[in-house]
Length: 145
Image (tube, rainbow, N blue to C red):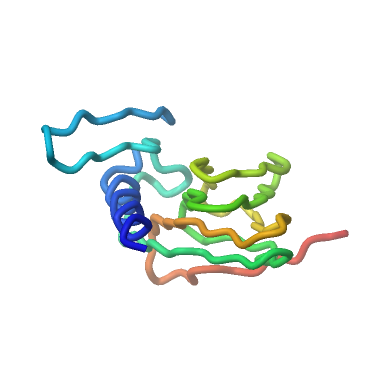
């Protein structure tokens, strides 16, 4: 559990520090010191380049569970899979199956869903960079079938 907590703290620091191109960069740590591994760096999308609040959550999904179609007004979402796999569907981009160690960036105002199609549980670190704290955090979106 200590390893997962340490990894969570490293990921939270990396994601919250500067969501500003998507490339992986490995940081060299001083001998015996902590190592910070950047997993995503990207400009804010659809938020007029401002952030009022950053919210970091751990998402836990049992097999067969799903979040409904939804969007985050004024908030970009970053989802990093810690264990298991998570299927993410983003409007206009189709399906992405993310395995442990993989990440996706979802622009503000874009409807999407996440589900666990696997046979075991899944966990993900989810970060929202919010441009306006007065807007609702999440809005469920009705989709035509």
